[in-house]
Length: 347
Image 1 (cartoon, helix red, strand yellow):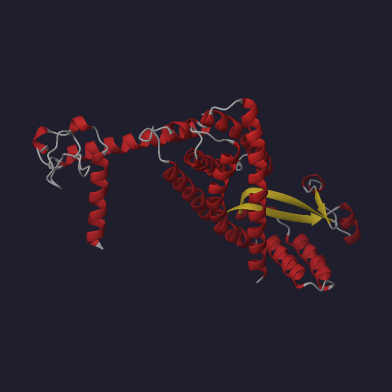
Image 2: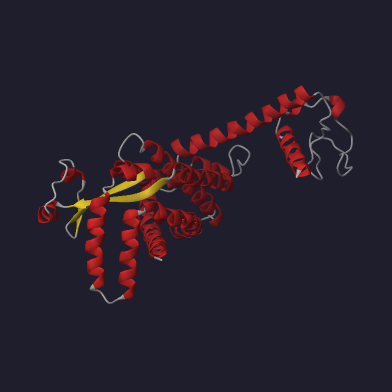
């Protein structure tokens, strides 16, 4: 174990020094031949194996200073990438696909980092992407002899079977528990179970049972949902690539270009979701979800326009058809994941 840790630490130092300023390599630490493969070196890096012409044998303080310089160099690239991704749609994908690969973080790395941060944050903060609170509607309340809080008649606007529902987007489990009224939930569940008892189809019984469990324990539902969602989104990347390639073709719009663009778009999607969760701490999550949808409707055509340099007419048409096709496939996939989550909860 200690050997592994030492190797990791050495790798970090070597990687940091590798990206540091080439001018910082003292002459005494340079050699005529590569220390790894023995090839003659004329530049700072070996032309055969790529190792830097530097034995790193100097004072610890200077080595640490050079390593920090390398780290800050990496960080500047990260900030440059994310700044352009969020505020200059399509710029990173276009320049990266056309060869500017040391200027920005690679699409795969950016995608993996932000998706990891997103789902890690969901787990640590115990945030539910979606939860539902329920209360009897005005007519149902009169039937049951229940006096609703004054605010409930305006907050709960989604009516179904005499009950009104409030969708909670991007809220923590603690927020759900503070808003949920267990008495109302139990009343709704009893009504649903009485309806289920009259049904003979086993699939309907399982789906209703799963939904009642979701009303009581959205954290369990979201746990299953969050497990499958990254897999769904991962497979949506090549689908977005193919859909884009159907409508935009040419020597500057190869599958490679569409793949780079699709990965960066999904990277922005995850970063937007993470940002939406943070903003939902200050304003209602439903409003944040609506703003996010509108923002993406504007972001996508701007990104396509800058990436593929097509006319606005073709860009808008592509956005519409790709958006519709992508949405249909994504909704079907999410419904499948939702059904799986309900069945899992029912079991």
